[in-house]
Length: 218
Image (cartoon, rainbow, N blue to C red):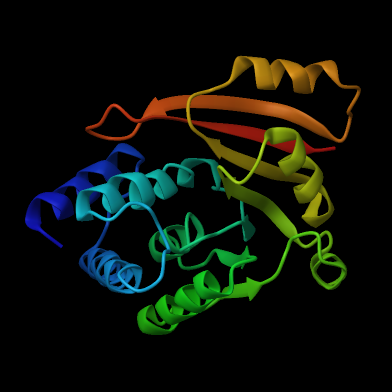
Protein backbone atom coordinates (compact mmCIF):
# COMPACT_ATOMS: atom_id res chain seq x y z
CA UNK A 1 0.00 0.00 0.00
CA UNK A 2 1.41 3.41 -0.94
CA UNK A 3 2.35 5.57 2.04
CA UNK A 4 -0.28 8.24 1.30
CA UNK A 5 -3.02 5.59 1.20
CA UNK A 6 -1.74 4.02 4.41
CA UNK A 7 -1.88 7.45 6.04
CA UNK A 8 -5.43 7.89 4.74
CA UNK A 9 -6.38 4.54 6.29
CA UNK A 10 -4.80 5.31 9.67
CA UNK A 11 -6.05 8.91 9.93
CA UNK A 12 -9.44 7.97 8.52
CA UNK A 13 -9.87 5.20 11.08
CA UNK A 14 -9.06 7.70 13.85
CA UNK A 15 -12.01 9.79 12.67
CA UNK A 16 -14.22 6.87 13.75
CA UNK A 17 -12.43 6.46 17.09
CA UNK A 18 -10.25 3.55 15.89
CA UNK A 19 -6.49 3.41 16.50
CA UNK A 20 -4.95 0.88 14.14
CA UNK A 21 -1.90 -1.02 15.34
CA UNK A 22 0.92 -2.21 13.08
CA UNK A 23 -0.49 -5.71 12.67
CA UNK A 24 -3.91 -4.34 11.66
CA UNK A 25 -2.35 -2.03 9.08
CA UNK A 26 -0.44 -5.02 7.68
CA UNK A 27 -3.70 -6.99 7.48
CA UNK A 28 -5.40 -4.22 5.52
CA UNK A 29 -2.37 -3.98 3.25
CA UNK A 30 -2.52 -7.71 2.46
CA UNK A 31 -6.30 -7.53 1.98
CA UNK A 32 -5.87 -4.66 -0.47
CA UNK A 33 -3.17 -6.40 -2.50
CA UNK A 34 -5.14 -9.65 -2.72
CA UNK A 35 -8.30 -7.80 -3.73
CA UNK A 36 -6.49 -5.98 -6.54
CA UNK A 37 -4.88 -9.25 -7.70
CA UNK A 38 -8.11 -11.27 -7.70
CA UNK A 39 -9.98 -8.40 -9.31
CA UNK A 40 -7.82 -8.71 -12.44
CA UNK A 41 -9.35 -12.14 -13.08
CA UNK A 42 -12.82 -12.00 -11.53
CA UNK A 43 -15.02 -8.99 -10.96
CA UNK A 44 -15.17 -8.52 -7.19
CA UNK A 45 -15.47 -4.74 -7.12
CA UNK A 46 -15.79 -1.90 -9.61
CA UNK A 47 -13.33 0.11 -7.51
CA UNK A 48 -9.86 -0.67 -8.82
CA UNK A 49 -7.49 1.85 -7.23
CA UNK A 50 -5.70 1.67 -3.88
CA UNK A 51 -7.15 4.97 -2.70
CA UNK A 52 -10.64 4.03 -3.82
CA UNK A 53 -10.52 0.73 -1.93
CA UNK A 54 -9.12 2.35 1.23
CA UNK A 55 -11.75 5.07 1.16
CA UNK A 56 -14.89 3.46 -0.26
CA UNK A 57 -14.42 -0.06 1.12
CA UNK A 58 -12.14 -0.05 4.18
CA UNK A 59 -13.06 3.28 5.78
CA UNK A 60 -16.71 3.02 4.78
CA UNK A 61 -16.81 -0.37 6.52
CA UNK A 62 -15.13 1.00 9.65
CA UNK A 63 -17.69 3.81 9.90
CA UNK A 64 -20.13 1.27 11.38
CA UNK A 65 -17.85 0.37 14.29
CA UNK A 66 -19.04 3.09 16.72
CA UNK A 67 -22.55 1.58 16.59
CA UNK A 68 -21.44 -1.96 17.46
CA UNK A 69 -20.17 -1.43 21.02
CA UNK A 70 -22.68 -3.89 22.53
CA UNK A 71 -22.57 -6.40 19.68
CA UNK A 72 -21.12 -9.87 20.12
CA UNK A 73 -22.59 -11.65 17.06
CA UNK A 74 -22.99 -9.94 13.69
CA UNK A 75 -24.50 -11.08 10.37
CA UNK A 76 -23.29 -9.30 7.21
CA UNK A 77 -25.87 -9.68 4.43
CA UNK A 78 -24.65 -9.35 0.83
CA UNK A 79 -21.04 -9.14 1.95
CA UNK A 80 -19.51 -9.04 -1.55
CA UNK A 81 -15.72 -8.97 -1.29
CA UNK A 82 -16.03 -9.01 2.51
CA UNK A 83 -17.38 -5.55 3.32
CA UNK A 84 -18.04 -4.42 5.97
CA UNK A 85 -17.55 -7.69 7.91
CA UNK A 86 -13.85 -8.43 7.34
CA UNK A 87 -12.58 -4.88 8.11
CA UNK A 88 -14.70 -4.89 11.28
CA UNK A 89 -13.19 -8.25 12.28
CA UNK A 90 -9.65 -6.97 11.69
CA UNK A 91 -10.12 -4.07 14.10
CA UNK A 92 -12.23 -5.96 16.68
CA UNK A 93 -11.25 -9.66 16.83
CA UNK A 94 -13.75 -10.64 19.59
CA UNK A 95 -16.66 -9.89 17.25
CA UNK A 96 -18.25 -13.13 15.98
CA UNK A 97 -19.17 -12.47 12.34
CA UNK A 98 -21.04 -14.45 9.69
CA UNK A 99 -20.74 -13.28 6.07
CA UNK A 100 -23.29 -14.36 3.48
CA UNK A 101 -23.38 -13.77 -0.25
CA UNK A 102 -25.09 -15.50 -3.18
CA UNK A 103 -22.07 -15.21 -5.51
CA UNK A 104 -19.70 -18.17 -5.14
CA UNK A 105 -16.55 -16.39 -6.37
CA UNK A 106 -17.01 -13.68 -3.76
CA UNK A 107 -17.32 -16.26 -0.99
CA UNK A 108 -14.21 -18.02 -2.35
CA UNK A 109 -12.33 -14.72 -2.07
CA UNK A 110 -13.63 -14.08 1.44
CA UNK A 111 -12.49 -17.53 2.59
CA UNK A 112 -9.09 -16.91 1.01
CA UNK A 113 -8.67 -13.66 2.96
CA UNK A 114 -9.91 -15.28 6.19
CA UNK A 115 -7.25 -17.99 5.80
CA UNK A 116 -4.45 -15.59 4.86
CA UNK A 117 -5.15 -13.27 7.79
CA UNK A 118 -5.75 -16.13 10.23
CA UNK A 119 -9.09 -14.67 11.32
CA UNK A 120 -10.99 -16.76 13.86
CA UNK A 121 -14.71 -16.49 14.60
CA UNK A 122 -15.45 -15.39 11.05
CA UNK A 123 -17.52 -17.61 8.73
CA UNK A 124 -18.31 -17.06 5.04
CA UNK A 125 -21.47 -18.77 3.76
CA UNK A 126 -22.52 -19.16 0.14
CA UNK A 127 -26.27 -18.79 -0.31
CA UNK A 128 -29.26 -16.50 -0.35
CA UNK A 129 -30.56 -15.02 2.86
CA UNK A 130 -34.03 -16.31 1.92
CA UNK A 131 -32.88 -19.95 1.64
CA UNK A 132 -34.86 -22.25 3.92
CA UNK A 133 -31.77 -24.00 5.27
CA UNK A 134 -30.10 -20.70 6.15
CA UNK A 135 -33.24 -19.38 7.83
CA UNK A 136 -33.56 -22.55 9.90
CA UNK A 137 -29.92 -22.71 10.97
CA UNK A 138 -29.44 -19.02 11.86
CA UNK A 139 -32.86 -17.83 13.02
CA UNK A 140 -32.74 -15.50 16.04
CA UNK A 141 -28.98 -15.90 16.40
CA UNK A 142 -27.54 -12.40 16.03
CA UNK A 143 -27.21 -9.28 18.17
CA UNK A 144 -26.92 -7.22 14.99
CA UNK A 145 -27.39 -7.51 11.24
CA UNK A 146 -25.50 -5.20 8.90
CA UNK A 147 -25.75 -4.56 5.18
CA UNK A 148 -24.08 -2.09 2.84
CA UNK A 149 -26.33 -0.91 0.00
CA UNK A 150 -27.80 -4.40 -0.35
CA UNK A 151 -31.39 -3.41 -1.18
CA UNK A 152 -34.10 -0.91 -0.36
CA UNK A 153 -34.82 -0.42 3.34
CA UNK A 154 -38.16 -2.20 3.37
CA UNK A 155 -36.74 -5.34 1.72
CA UNK A 156 -33.69 -5.31 3.98
CA UNK A 157 -35.84 -5.00 7.09
CA UNK A 158 -37.96 -7.97 6.02
CA UNK A 159 -34.95 -10.15 5.19
CA UNK A 160 -33.00 -9.27 8.34
CA UNK A 161 -35.85 -9.69 10.82
CA UNK A 162 -35.76 -13.50 11.33
CA UNK A 163 -32.03 -13.48 12.12
CA UNK A 164 -32.10 -10.88 14.89
CA UNK A 165 -32.53 -11.57 18.57
CA UNK A 166 -35.30 -9.60 20.28
CA UNK A 167 -33.91 -6.13 20.85
CA UNK A 168 -31.24 -6.73 18.18
CA UNK A 169 -30.08 -3.96 15.89
CA UNK A 170 -30.23 -3.68 12.10
CA UNK A 171 -27.58 -1.33 10.67
CA UNK A 172 -28.38 -0.20 7.15
CA UNK A 173 -25.39 1.46 5.47
CA UNK A 174 -26.45 3.78 2.66
CA UNK A 175 -25.33 6.69 0.54
CA UNK A 176 -27.00 10.05 1.08
CA UNK A 177 -29.95 9.84 3.47
CA UNK A 178 -33.25 9.46 1.60
CA UNK A 179 -35.87 11.21 3.72
CA UNK A 180 -38.66 10.03 1.40
CA UNK A 181 -37.64 6.38 1.84
CA UNK A 182 -37.62 6.80 5.63
CA UNK A 183 -40.97 8.59 5.46
CA UNK A 184 -42.46 5.68 3.53
CA UNK A 185 -41.35 3.33 6.29
CA UNK A 186 -42.96 5.40 9.01
CA UNK A 187 -46.24 5.48 7.10
CA UNK A 188 -46.48 1.68 7.21
CA UNK A 189 -48.12 0.08 10.21
CA UNK A 190 -45.06 -1.97 11.05
CA UNK A 191 -44.28 -2.47 14.73
CA UNK A 192 -41.50 -5.00 14.18
CA UNK A 193 -38.82 -2.32 14.30
CA UNK A 194 -38.19 1.00 15.98
CA UNK A 195 -36.00 3.55 14.22
CA UNK A 196 -33.30 4.06 16.83
CA UNK A 197 -31.34 6.74 15.01
CA UNK A 198 -29.70 7.97 11.83
CA UNK A 199 -26.24 9.36 11.12
CA UNK A 200 -24.99 11.25 8.07
CA UNK A 201 -21.33 11.99 7.42
CA UNK A 202 -18.63 12.38 4.79
CA UNK A 203 -15.96 9.73 4.45
CA UNK A 204 -12.64 11.12 5.74
CA UNK A 205 -10.84 13.56 3.43
CA UNK A 206 -13.49 13.18 0.72
CA UNK A 207 -16.81 14.48 -0.56
CA UNK A 208 -18.46 11.04 -0.42
CA UNK A 209 -21.57 11.34 1.70
CA UNK A 210 -22.72 8.29 3.64
CA UNK A 211 -25.47 7.46 6.12
CA UNK A 212 -26.26 4.77 8.67
CA UNK A 213 -29.74 3.91 9.88
CA UNK A 214 -30.26 1.91 13.07
CA UNK A 215 -33.42 -0.12 13.64
CA UNK A 216 -34.17 -2.02 16.83
CA UNK A 217 -36.17 -5.24 16.60
CA UNK A 218 -39.25 -5.10 18.81
